[in-house]
Image (cartoon, rainbow, N blue to C red; front, side, top):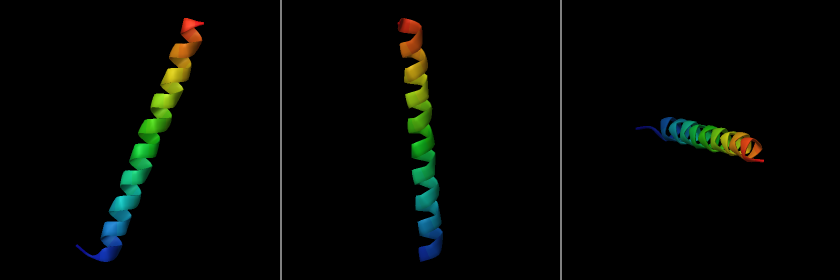
Length: 36
């Protein structure tokens, strides 16, 4: 595996995790709204 390929894979992983986190956060906000 080349260095550049490794960096690209790492960036994709970070973006994937951030997307999961933001999705979970918006889901929490939605649930919180329904609870109020």
